[in-house]
Image (cartoon, rainbow, N blue to C red; front, side):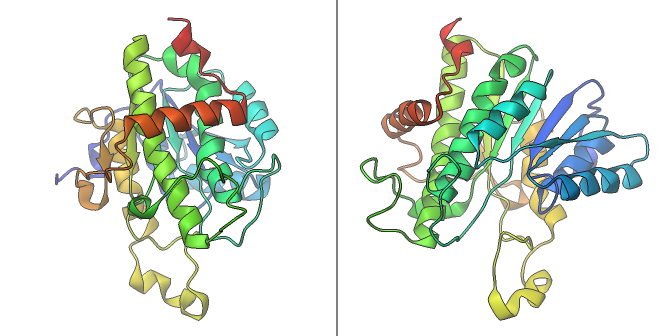
Length: 289
């Protein structure tokens, strides 16, 4: 645990941060604080109206901020490719967006929605932005996971979860994939000599729209922490000089221990190869070094 607060963020002038899902939830205060400390922030979101309103909110809070909207639908690999093609520089990539506890649905490319959005969309985005990340000394990739990952299982013979689907088990699987990806990205970057730090976070129970409480929804703000508090682990992971690759930070900046399954290098390597095949994104920057 540390006494670090967002006020501890260093000057980020000259750096560009891409924050997925920055139109709401913990993504918005994440983008706001990065902009407040000088970063050029790209608010990456599916809904243009909500994305542009988020940019407007950032500019109202920080009039001299550099912030722009970029359309990104993580449930559509064509959208991911289009968005990545618009990004010319990136120092900080915050893989924050996510969906949770959905009835079984599929992405535009036919993947189970939670796995396709939370993992495959971010896997593809990171790979497509890798050349720009590799060109930025000290680049970081922060991927938002959850303590729910501990209940996750990956059945490679049923990635579509067509034989057995559960809203909670599907979410847990996607969050396990996030942690496996974080570790494998760090190992591959180190092996290739790419100056990149890959870190995961768990924001804790936060009052965002991703959580559905039914008739208790109006009480969410009384039950859970604020989005500003939930953003702190991501901000710390993205900016603190004390962070090391592969670490996993939770509420109150506690360094968490991923589950045994999440630490499996064999499982992580297999997921990486399967994700490469499914998305067609090959992280060629690693192979070319």
